[in-house]
Amino acid sequence: MANPYHNLYDKKGSEIYKGLVEAKKIGLVKHIGVSTYTIDEIKKIILRFKEISIIMLPYNVFDQRPIKT
Image (tube, rainbow, N blue to C red):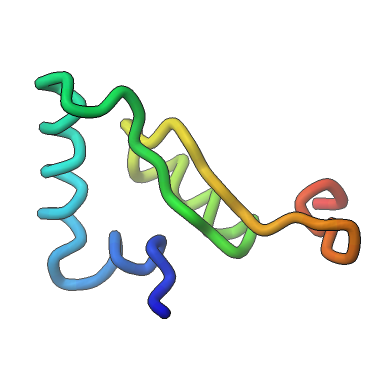
């Protein structure tokens, strides 16, 4: 299964992002979100994609890297 984060950085990534921003602009969606796996991915998203307001990452009792980073 492909990582949705990586979809933003492939050949059609800018088209995908523009489509999501347009959907938000015309009221089809309230928020744009992305799933990530690492803190580095989150940092890159925050810097490059200003309209993304929700970021999801794995977190559980065994994997608590997000809190420790």
